Length: 413
Image 1 (cartoon, rainbow, N blue to C red):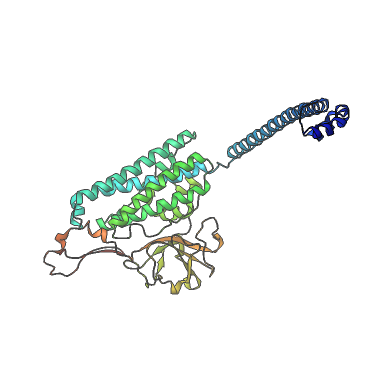
Image 2 (image 1 turned 60 degrees about the horizontal axis):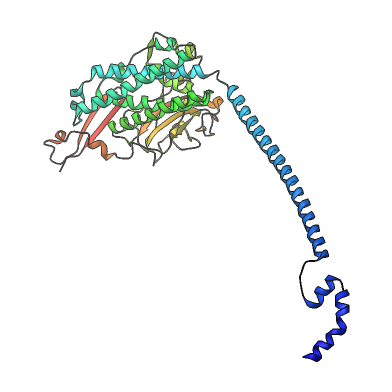
């Protein structure tokens, strides 16, 4: 051991004279010294610079964020202002026409139900084959009151627009041909409700005021519920198709005008010219495979030989286009079908915004193709109608001009 110590003695002067870093390297110590302090100082300086840089960067980031937020806010405000400006510049020039047009339709329906229910009481519906005539009458009264509410609402909307609906409120109507009996009344009510849906859908294409658009939609959905009830009362499919169909105001006016008997001039009041009138002249209901025949003032002096019939059904993109002499109802059709006559073999678009008015000769006419049995309708009918029928079906048929409504009731087991 002593010899080892003696070996170290000659090295002591050198170790004592050696700078700290070398000593550390030799003996493996990490005691801080001047260089370490310098290094720490350098590190602190670097940290200070880094912190300063970080603060500066943070300030810069803050400034950038502020700038970004400001830009985003500015962009948002600009977009909002742009949207607001767009809304404020929306074309609302047709809004009053749409309101008056809807008021005319609601006025017609309101008068129709008032006139019909004054003529047909609960017993009349029972005599027509319904099990509970009072319930049928009550439901129709509710529908009539809805139409009255729609009318008064539209009148109020017109007043809010500093206008009125007086020139269509004064219209008088004649429903004699539609109220010959309960069956014809219900068939006509079904037609009016469906046309009402199409009228509101078509009217929305002209509305500029979004709040008015919402009001129209709120009425349209109720009209659809009315139509479902009337489908049931007429033994048709409650909801025949997944989509309804829109008509232009001119097309709706063509269907409504025949009921207007005086007191107003719808064409002058609305500034609209109805499309040429078209009617289906088949004697009785129209079914798949039947050839559809046409009449009406719109084709009174028109040679039909070169014309084409166009059937538009809910959900289609274009009409079923057939030569008028071969206008047979296609298999599989059920529910409402709008029919038009054109002078072209090109199918008429189902979208009123894309229809080529230059090829339209007359229409629309409306037909209901009730090819699917609605068993729910039978629940509304009186089983007493089968008394003494010995298991045979009993038909309740009512003829009104060229329209025949047939209800078949099976004997309850």
